[in-house]
Length: 67
Image 1 (cartoon, one colour):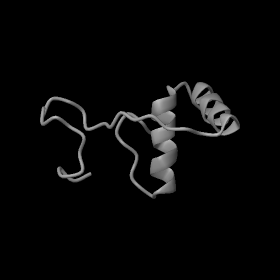
Image 2 (cartoon, helix red, strand yellow):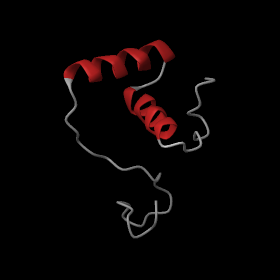
Image 3 (spheres, one colour):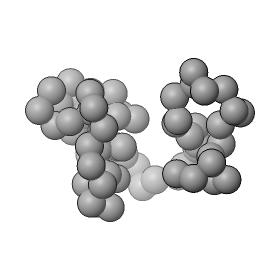
Image 4 (cartoon, one colour):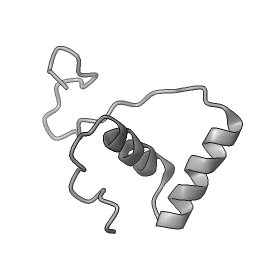
């Protein structure tokens, strides 16, 4: 994400994560949550994994499906 698009407050020690609220079909959310639990991940990490795979982006260190 470019600096112009970043939600960061400029603190270089802060991870480059965006905090957001979304509305998702309840059944879709249940599937994501169940997959996260199965993988031993929290929902945010699992959702990021899914989005990175969908957009053909490399996995972030510590977030791979090999954990």
